[in-house]
Image (cartoon, rainbow, N blue to C red):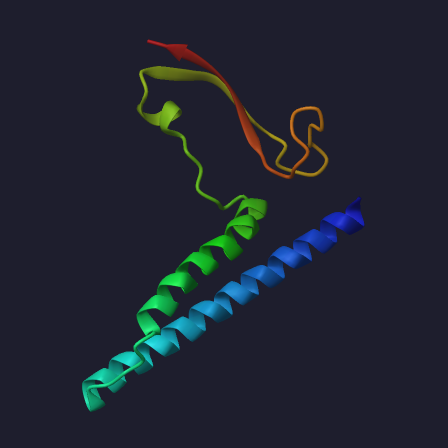
Length: 118
């Protein structure tokens, strides 16, 4: 299982590198398009569409990598804005040794909290 987890981690790292290279190509392409449009009144007519699709690709390639590292967006609206008070909270499943197979077979962490509603 450790070999599979390591291989999956390497795959996610590769996807993050591909996303970074895609971002670099997009920056160079948009910069070249702007320079060409200002100097020659022509540019790359397809640059806008390609950069839009590149943003989607970058998002999809980096989301699993960020999630595995625990750096993905977390929504804590209930704990910060609701009329409630957390009496107790614990992060579970944030390491491969704490995974709870009956609940979910993944490497995602979760929060268990006891709230007091006002």
